[in-house]
Amino acid sequence: MSKILEISNAVEAGKKKVVVQLVKEALEEGLSPMDILNEGMIKAMGNVGEKFKLNEIYVPEMLVAARAMKAGVEVLKPHLGENKGASLGKFIICSVEGDLHDIGKNLVAMMVESTGYEVLDIGVDVSAEKLIAAIKENPDCNLVGLSSLLTTTMPAMKKLVAAIKEAGLDQQVKIMVGGAPITQEFADSIGADAFAADAASAAAKAKELAAR
Ligand code: B12
Image 1 (cartoon, rainbow, N blue to C red):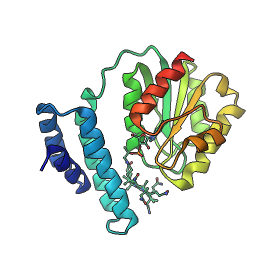
Image 2 (image 1 turned 90 degrees about the horizontal axis):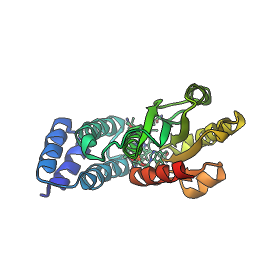
Image 3 (image 1 turned 90 degrees about the vertical axis):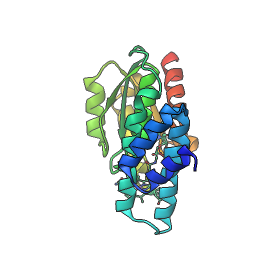
């Protein structure tokens, strides 16, 4: 079995210690960190989601898989792109109100940081009040990232974008949105400045937005 497949199976099975060990071995063997992430771990979480949908597994299994992936990402982190020192600005990122999923958000934070943004992660289940306060407290913030993994929290994303505009803070920040159910069309419909489907494209978009 290939190392990547072993990693994927271990993430799916929620075997945290095994994942950590396998990721270390894969890096030592010279496998690409992006391949380990995309083909080993993110794909595994997709499989976990499919099994959940089919009632083959339940929330606790999803949770242990998520923990295993997080542990693996920690090992990968130093290899996922060098931090070029904050110069592009400050990026505030969160998962929207009602949404507790944070793996994708954390990956986006990590990749955007590696392009040269300072990152302020204000967590999950973030209300409009909390987000607006964070932007106001950080006048050097020029980019906001909103993550939503549930179709039921997409309206909360719309609410956060509207709140930023109502507060006049769209003069200060650009807004980038993402998450499994989010599309370019949805991003356009709620007035976001950018959408990205994955962490690598989010980093590229963030760089592009800083140059605008
Ligand atoms: C792990 C997981 C959980 C874990 C989360 C743990 C954690 N700390 O994050 C737990 C067990 C807590 C959980 C709970 C629930 N979950 Co869940 N979960 C998942 C699962 C299996 C994986 C998500 C994941 O981490 N993927 C890996 C990451 C890397 O991918 P990603 O999040 O999509 O992020 C990438 C992109 O989307 C993008 N991106 C993400 N955010 C952002 C932000 C910006 C700014 C940008 C530019 C890009 C971007 O870049 C990321 C990196 O490439 C998904 C299945 C799936 N296919 O997504 C279901 C899934 C999202 N969950 C689902 C459901 C239903 C739930 C629950 C309601 C279950 C329940 N009955 O309680 C709860 C809701 C809790 C809540 N209020 O949020 C459904 C959602 C269905 C829907 N259409 O809305 C899914 C799709 C499973 C399914 N197939 O049914 N879940």
